[in-house]
Length: 113
Image 1 (tube, helix red, strand yellow):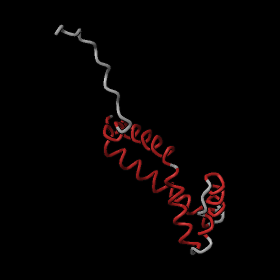
Image 2 (cartoon, helix red, strand yellow):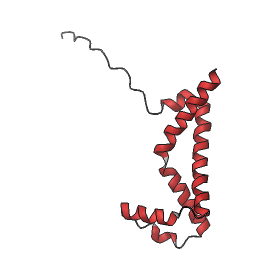
Image 3 (cartoon, rainbow, N blue to C red):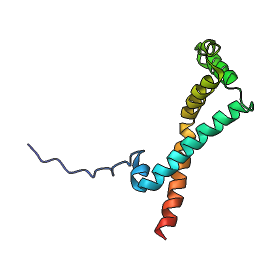
Image 4 (cartoon, rainbow, N blue to C red):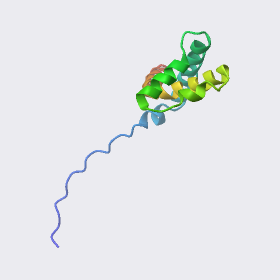
């Protein structure tokens, strides 16, 4: 068999999770703070009347075609607000991860000085 000419390999593509590994503890605290702060802000806004989470779920139902809004009327309003606030907080992941990474980079660079 003839020898094949060696072809240069492409550099390894960095994974999407390289930021948390690189920044470690600052990322852990910034992500936890942004996660807890976002969930708490949504819950407080729902309890103070500034955000009607039942309308949010009903709009989501019409967009996606589910019937989750029908079940909200049987829940205790306070428990329902907690459940929907947690669900809305999970939907904010595309915003939360880059924000937490940005905060971790800033904290990490200040700690190295």
